[in-house]
Every structure is written in structure tokens, then in C-alpha cells.
Length: 192
Image 1 (spheres, helix red, strand yellow):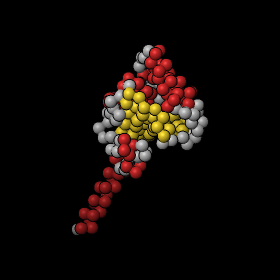
Image 2 (cartoon, helix red, strand yellow):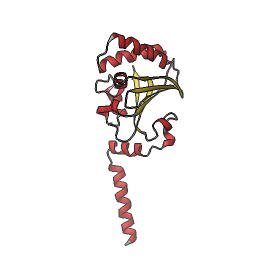
Image 3 (cartoon, rainbow, N blue to C red):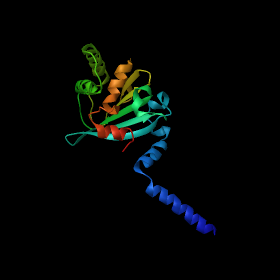
Image 4 (cartoon, rainbow, N blue to C red):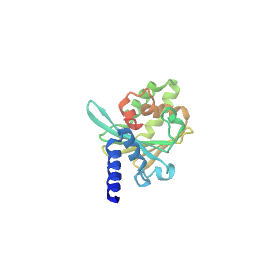
């Protein structure tokens, strides 16, 4: 009798694993993320963060970077700028920091409107924040949910700014519905 119950319990458990939806499985895997998996910068800045999702940006089929979204429980995609989270990019090719900054301004314009003065200020900020990168380099942007943004390149902070509109528009490149990479957005938000 005991062995029959044990077999039924094992069969039920196996069925749950086999028939779980990909989204549920993704959420289960993300829930198992430990603090040891967190980027070093987040262990003190955002210790409750868990991996929400990952994705790869490709340009003409070539991998540009892998992106990872880290957030604390309760993160809501529709109000992303009002939550503490981090976006980590691990580059797979060499790119100039100035080109990254200029492209960021163009992508931010897809998310919302801003003045030419804001454009100049933000371009100068991002030119300082984003050095030239090579394969294996890591850029991390940390949003505190109250308008402060910090950028880290390979473990070293490059810039910190308090500007809620900048935070919303910059991280909107990846997280807003207007993103030019909807598949990457879906992957980052753990919706795929």
C-alpha cells in the first residue's frame, strides 16, 4: 500500500514538472535564484533582487549583448520606473561608448518626448557613463525606483544621476511597450 502511494506521489510530481507551462517554469527557476547569482553590485544595493528574465540583442543576426533584468519581488512591468531594479548588459563585441550613448538617445525618443537641452545633457552624461566596450565587458544600470540611476562598467561605478524622467525614458528602451526590440522586452520581463 505504501509503495503504491509513493508511486502515485512520484507520478503526480513528474506530471507537474512535465506539464508546467514555460512561463510557470521560468518563474519557478527565477524564484530559485540565490544571492550568490546576483551581480556583486546588487548584493548590497538590491539584495532581494531575483532574475526576472534574460534575452539577447541581435543586429543583422550578430549577437550584440545578452541582457538580464534583476528586480525585487513585486516588480510590475507597467510601472517599471517606480520600482528598484537593475539591467545588466554583457557585450559580445566591441562598440564605442559614444555610439552607445548616441543610439540610446535615438531609442529614448521612441519611448517619449524630451527637449533638445535634455538631449544634450543626457548625451553628455551617457558619454561619460558608457566607455568603449569589448567582448565580455559588462554594463549595469541600477534604478532605485525614485529617479536615481547608477551606471557600473565592469564593477566600477561611472556615473550617478537623479532624474526620474531620464530613468523612465532610458530604461524604457528595453522595458516600455514602445521598445524597438519587443522580443527582447518580452524575454526580459519573463513573459516568453
